[in-house]
Image 1 (tube, rainbow, N blue to C red):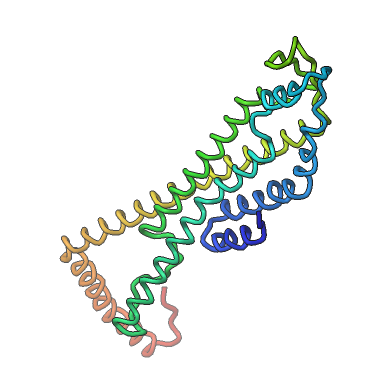
Image 2: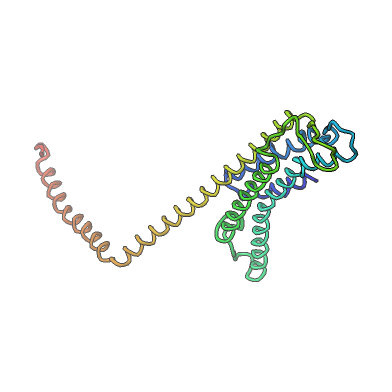
Length: 269
């Protein structure tokens, strides 16, 4: 897998994301992809070779290993990282679609015309695409965590497993290689995945509340504008009253100035 190309594709989503989305992308690459590439592959690289059973029956160790490890942790995490980041490409594709429509619109109506104020701004269909991608990512994360929990019994890796699958002649004891190290990495990857789920949920709540607040603000401004349009006389009456008050003050100020000019030594109260 070419992780550099994968990172380059997903980095384009970063400029369209919220703060939660940027944190999510950093967690995915720093705490999941980097740990997967640098350490996890080496920890699980020799898992079948270190799976020892106390029997010499041909095929027994292979069958027992397949029974307890139907899918490798490392391959399951690779599938999870691919599936969980694919919904983010929906946003990039939608922005590319907007940019293509904008280009065709300018060719047809001139360079000064615009179809979108900003092709990368989350309004209209792009907002829905971004929100749906978050739901997809959250659902995929939960599904893979449940699958890992179901296969490996609460993410645990015991030191000893007992196997009586054919062609084993009887109940066979099998030992997993480096179970503590594998258990630590399993808990770390599960914790990082759970943290990504929390970030996705927070971003969903943030987007919805922001949209509701903006809609409520628009409704409030529309009602105020309609109220002013229905009662234009009140606004004109208020302006006229202020104008008359200003005119009534002018004679009083003029009389006061004449008194001060005729008797400058007298102090006025």
